[in-house]
Image 1 (tube, helix red, strand yellow):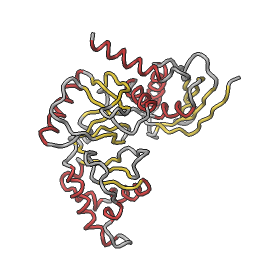
Image 2 (cartoon, rainbow, N blue to C red):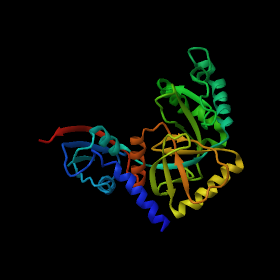
Image 3 (cartoon, one colour):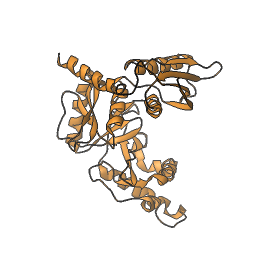
Length: 313
């Protein structure tokens, strides 16, 4: 009974995405888009699956797009008549909704690694300074799970250094078990945090893919918009083990959505019941859209090649 109530709550929150002037029986515009799977080698069956996933995401909340494969290539034509804001439809279409949870090494490990890399790269930097140290901001949030922040304009340079084999080799035996991801870019902070994440023996997150039973927009302890999720029964036991391990090791867990770290909380002990919360610099609307995307299941990562909006008379 409790599970049914939770599912109903998630559907109510999800439906709010397309109510109050969004998708309804009286559209005022037609949106046509040409989209392409990010995986250029996707098979015909994978493209068919992507089309079905996108269609189901919209139909779950009362919107009925048409999708057709464009003959001769791997692109898809998307058409939808709606009164929802065009930019919001575009975001909802492009959100993959792929949620993953990663173990993290101790926060100090990232600084140790970057210090070693700076020592090796110092002579090659044109400024004569240690590259990472030159780009670093002070840690704006001691509980963020990251100890290294850079300006948005400098992320490409950091990525270039992290792609060097000589730099990655500094990780030693862990080089194939470590992944670097950026955090969310917020509206209020001038820098973006870099996170060091641990991969399992299969090169993946500790918990990912079909783990969510329900997701809904909520508010965190600071009364800021957040996303509350309840995991499936199978994932709940894995989540309890994962949080118990992080508590024992005094480390944090990275909550990652579409390859962006939204939060990296510490835990006060094993968490039972598969409950978790995603926090970030969200508006209520953004949190609702992300919750709806997560609740309705992930879709393959796509690129929007064309996007046209036409008013209906």
